[in-house]
Image (cartoon, rainbow, N blue to C red; front, side, top):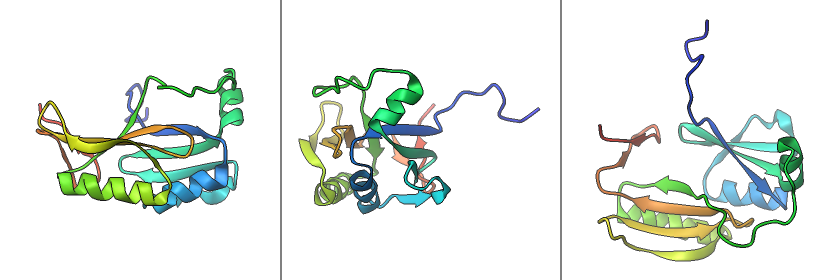
Length: 149
């Protein structure tokens, strides 16, 4: 019996994208490394710390999930992705890199009500990313978010 059988964990986040090449270029410009290229232009996989970020054409992803591809949401989708950092300076650097890569600024990085520092950007398809430094949390050398007990 496999050691991981029965365990639940987040391994991959797949984003539906409307312009595959543009989105691949965007995430490469953020510094993510594309792997498993045997999938060609069907799906792109990126190492993103302990999880994987995958890009799949919007309509193909909807079809795979047997969900309606239209209408596409223009407003808040009820979820965000996050990139945790160890300092406000790291937050600023990640935000700057994202904007240089073509992200849209949603909320400038600023001090939060809980004593952290965070900002938001949207990727080319409007997926929201929070870039955050939160008190009590840190990112290990392996990219894993370290949670206190």
